[in-house]
Amino acid sequence: MDTIYRIRIRPLGPWRTPWQADTLTGLLCWMCVRTEGETVLRKEILEPMLAGEPPFVLSDAFPGDLLPIPAATRLADWPVELRKSVKRAAWLRPDAFVRACNGEPLDASDLVIDSPIAEYDHTRNTLSRMNDTTGMEGALFTLQEYRLNYSAGISGWGDGLSIYVRVRPRARELLLYLFDELACVGFGADVGIGKGAFGFPNGVPELEPVDLFQSDRRSGDKTLIVLSTFQPGPEDPTRGVWESFVKFGKLGPGLSGRGVEKRPLVLLRPGACFIAPSEARPYLGRAIPMEEILPAEITDDLRSQGVEVVHPAFGLTITANLRLQ
Image (cartoon, rainbow, N blue to C red; front, side, top):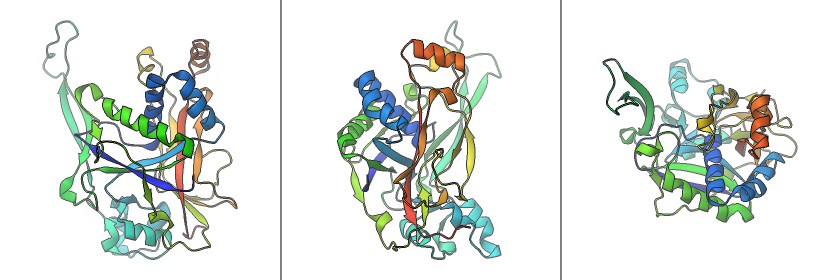
């Protein structure tokens, strides 16, 4: 899994679910069970994940060629007049990202302030289940949606998203097949009304080798930067800088109608930085087993029906030369 590839995604409209690595991996698993069956999912994906050897590890989807600001870079000794800009900025262009990885100082021109992903509220009207008409006055509600903000001047390939991936050779064909199948359905919530529709620039998913993360790297690499939404595993490094958040995850399409809710999960955002262990792995994180995300009575019931729920929370890493305390 040494080579990092990029899969280019072309959104065909707005989406409701953020393109986070754990959500995307989970949906690819659902496509596997739907198209290839439970045995393939269990043997080819779930069992390797639970053993700490995932067949593939994805980053979040990033706009164009932009990459997340490493958390350690935010804590650098920035001039006072730039600190608000550093707080607002979320992205770096590729050349600035490489310099940040090498511990070189950045300046104001390196920060991407205007977000290339626009967030907005979409207002809807409640429909009556009795007659399929709009409800009474005041029955409006809003849901958050996202779309690419072309006015922000997205760097590079400006009409899409980039997902970076490490994949074991035997899993490449399966991964591309699952991406292609997912594109037929859509990503995330409300795919039935066209949200999360996407395609690929050449019509099919492709693994494009990327050498950006290996360029100009020194022999003394001593830190890791994670490009995914993930949860560290018990053997992962603990010294570093990161931003955490609580995620209220949902079960996949086949179980979401059973009234089963996942426990809240504490995850780390892309850009987390860690002091690398002596033998740095190409990924951190783990597959969170069913016992940790569902109540015991639900777990027993699902297992009796032959259902195994796993939350994939691996993080794609790259080596860097950041200074961490």
